[in-house]
Amino acid sequence: MTAETFFLQGDPANAAPMAHYMRNRFPFLGVKTPERKRQLRPLIAASRTWSTEALRGAVAALYARPEREYQYAAIDLASARVRQWTLTDMRWLAEFVPVKAWWDSVDAWRMVFGRYIARHPAEKAAIFDWFFGQDDFWLRRVGITLQLMEKTQTDTAMLSRAILADRTTPEFFIQKAIGWALRQYSKTDSDWVRAFMRDHELMSLAVREGSKYL
Image (cartoon, rainbow, N blue to C red):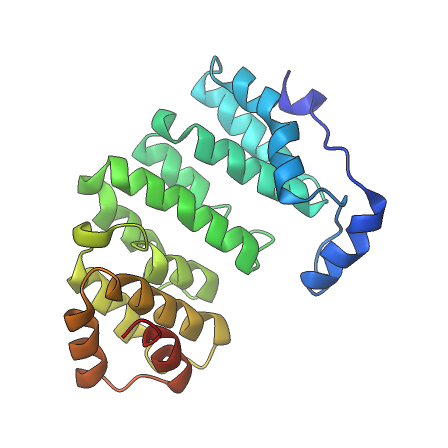
């Protein structure tokens, strides 16, 4: 099986509600997540023998298809093969983040980068720099939430830098990201998060989201 011969089979009855949930920004086939993952298994299994060039081609081909589930499938494939990627490949994958961007795809890409930095901690700073300070707020959202899975390996200086750069940015998805990052890290070091929120004036949405476990 190849990306060219892979097609998802959806339920038309699901398509309209799924599109509506995403504010009708994208067409949908009507394939819910568990079913998509089931249908994708043969392609992921086949990808184990692919070269990196073939894998890149498959990700790009799937991502280019119009239906939203194919963007999800491309990200699933990239995530499944995270052990195969190098830093150069990850830089290439970062170019997809602002393409057809909405919270669903952006946060799914962030998980791919999160899995990569868990395996390659020395490369975390380099990856963070791809997202920090970018004009596109979706890229900055990845920078803010990059360390969600890092727990005790969280670089608090990096986290502070990402948050403070967007501390007063009114964009909803940025403020949600700040709150999410703080809330997640509060599970590991609640004292640090309390002190950070005490020492820096944050917008109400970020405070509300960040304080949920404090």
